[in-house]
Amino acid sequence: MDLARYSRQVLFEPIGEDGQRRLSNSTVLVVGAGALGTVICNHLVRAGIGKVRLIDRDYVEMSNLQRQMLFDEDDVKCALPKAVAAGNKLEKMNSQVIIEPIVGNVSVENIDDLINDANVVLDGTDNFSTRYLLNDACFKYGIPFSYGGVVSSRGMTAFFIPEKTPCLRCITKQGEGGGETCDTVGVISPAVDMISSFQVTETLKYLTGNQQVLRQTLKTFDVWHNRQYDMKLSHSDPECVVCQKQEFPALQKKAQSEETVLCGRDTVQIHRKSVMDLEQWESKLGQIADTKRTPFLLKASLQEGIHFVMFTDGRVLVQGTEDPIQARTLYDRYIGS
Image (cartoon, rainbow, N blue to C red; front, side, top):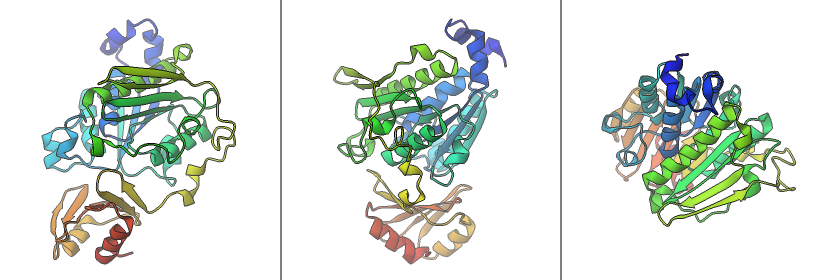
C-alpha cells in the first residue's frame, strides 16, 4: 500500500495509518452502478478500499449522464453495461484497488456468493425488492448494510448493523411509498451526491474502527426546499420478520419472480435462461427486427414498438411495456421457453 497516495486522508486523525491499512484490507459489495452506485464507487476507490465488487444489470443510456458520474458519451455509443463502463473508469482511477465488475441481476441464487467476503454492503439500487433482499441477507450473515435512496430533490439514508440497530424492514413497510421514481418525477444530481457521500462516510467510519461516531439515525432531507430530519434508530420492531424472528422472507426462492417490472422505465425484465448466445439470437431475430450486437448485449427493435435487450447471462429487458403479461406474451412469441 502506498501511504503517500492517501497522505491527506491519513492526516485526518480519526483514520490515520492504521485506518488506511484497515481500508486496504476491506472488501465491499456495491449493488447498482447507477446514480448512487457510481458516486459510491468513486469515493470508495479513491479512498483506497482493497476490493470493490460491483454488480449491475443495466446498460448506459444518454439520460444517465446527467447524474451517473462514471459514464460518458462513448459508453452510450457502445451500449456498455454499467458495471463494465464503471469498472473501466475505476481501474484507471486507482490501480491499487481490486475492481470486480459483474453484469447481472442480484437474486436469491447468487446473493450468498456476492456477499460472502464483504465487510459492508452498499445500496445503489432503485427498488425496494432488491433492498429487502440485501437487508435480509446482511442480517442473516451479520454484515452491515449502508442504505440510500434518492428521488426528485429528496434523499434518505441509514447504516444498519445486525444485532446493534433495527433493520430496513423495521422502518419501511413493504408496499409503502408513493411510487415516485427518478424516471417519473426526475432527480437532481446534488441530492444523489449527498446521499452517496453519507453512505460512504458511515462505511469509512465502520471500516476504520470508528464505530463510536456512527450516526445511528435514519437521515432524510430535501435539498431543494432546505429541509432535513434525523430519526434515531433506537428500537427494532418486535414483530420484524428479519431482525427479530429471523425468517428472512426475501431469501425464500418463491419470493422472486421470473418477471420484474422496472418501475418508471416502461420495461419488464424476464430471466428464464441461465445463458444466451447473442450471435445465435442475432441471426434468429435479425430476420424480423433491427438488431445491434455488442460483446455484452444484443438489442432487437420489433415493429410493434417493442425492444428486446438481451444479455449473455440469460436476462431479457422487454422495453415498451410495464405489463408483465404483455411482456411474457412477446417473450414467448419471439424467444420461447
